Image 1 (tube, protein in one colour):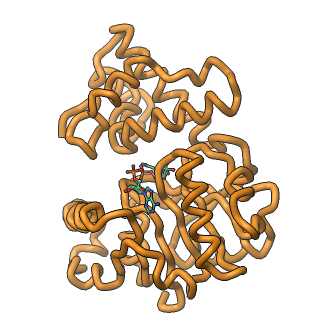
Image 2: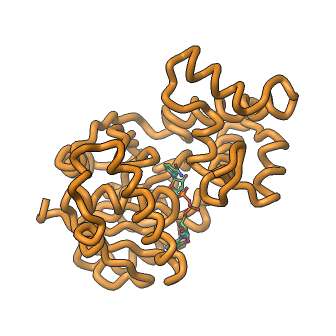
Amino acid sequence: MDKWKVGVVGAGTIGRSVAQDLAYRGCSVILKDQTEAILDESKKAMARDHKFFQLCDPKLRSVKMEDILPRILFTTTYSGFGELDLVIENVVENFDVKKSVYHDLDQVCRDHTIYAVNTSCISITKIGSAVTHPQNVIGMHFMNPVPQVPLVELVKGYHTSKTTIQYVREFLSACEKKTVLVNDFPGFVTNRVLMLMINECIFLVQDQVAEPEEIDAIFKWGFSHKMGPLATADLIGLDTILQSLEVLWESYHDPKYRPSPYLKRLVYAGHLGRKTGQGFFKY
Ligand code: NAD
């Protein structure tokens, strides 16, 4: 895995999980976020998550975080990005913010650098319009927590080239990930379905049909889901869920994607799920 040196932009919930997984697999990672404070928090979260991953994965039991962390360069600049072949972008689910990041990357990266967009719902073709070489842009949708989820949903934008697809497939296979390639339409396969299900479960709480514990129990015990939809929402982050539903609503103008007012209320109150210690459940 020494051959893979990867840039990861955004060290939030999913970006740090991507960086941690790549480091476990032996990649060398440059992890960029906006401030040292965010990077410090992300480093601490990786150490916390490592203990949990060790409990679940026997292969990690003898792995020490001190041996993994040096594979990640934590930085607030794009220094070093000019030598990379692959950048995985994980900044907030907002097109304007992502666009400004791609503008910066376009200035520093090489003509052939591949941009893998980790987005829940935003069109890969639209992201491609923000760079000089849209054939190098592909959706690389990871699921949280990345070290524990084998699937990566790959999304082919209008201009995505065969070379780009082949490169990322080879890379992800070296990372022992399973890939499914789908065409670009907002929300792709996963989140057109998952966001609807989560939103409807939030409406059930809002309408006082059932408590979050009861809703999740129905999915776990009735449908053998490993985790209920509302615990999943807390893990993803309720702000990201709301932003994703807003992207789906703006993209399709189909009322089925209107976010539940109760979800908005929780986000305005700062209850974003695991990342703030409270969402539908307390952590
Ligand atoms: P988050 O809010 O937890 O983290 C986003 C990070 O991006 C923050 O740390 C923020 O400081 C950083 N950022 C913003 N502007 C930046 C810039 N200019 N340079 C570097 N970093 C910058 O969000 P998240 O949940 O990690 O989601 C990130 C993206 O990944 C979103 O598009 C989301 O839809 C997608 N995604 C999230 C999940 C999930 O489970 N949370 C899963 C798959 C995909």
